[in-house]
Length: 132
Image 1 (cartoon, rainbow, N blue to C red):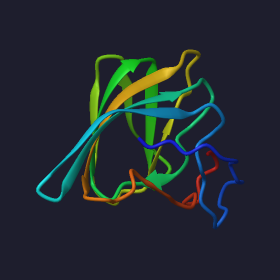
Image 2: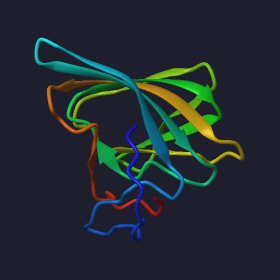
Image 3: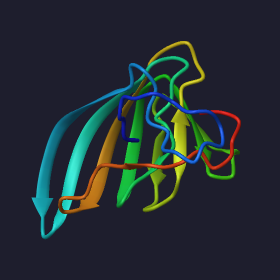
Image 4: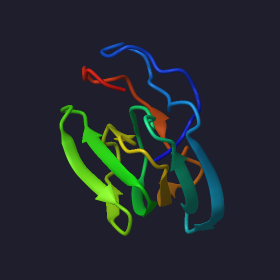
């Protein structure tokens, strides 16, 4: 679940939808083995905010430390609600958004498994959903 601070655009816009205000990420550790980067990062999503629509150029595995993450795929339907203690995974190239619909921060530990030098995530356009 990558975080890039920026302004959100209206639903259906043909532009990228960066993360909401206050969304942050801190790299805890990283290493490269045989052309693959392994990056462990803690991501915090405040109440009412989201990661913005995005995808990853590699596999991503997350663990919810605190709060509840609502996850949506590009069909605008929920594809999972993850509470503290839950694990989640995101396949390469899948456009999605993580939203904090609760009243407490969502804190995730996220392991990115990426081709060496690839970005953690890439912003994507809202696929036509009526939310960001």
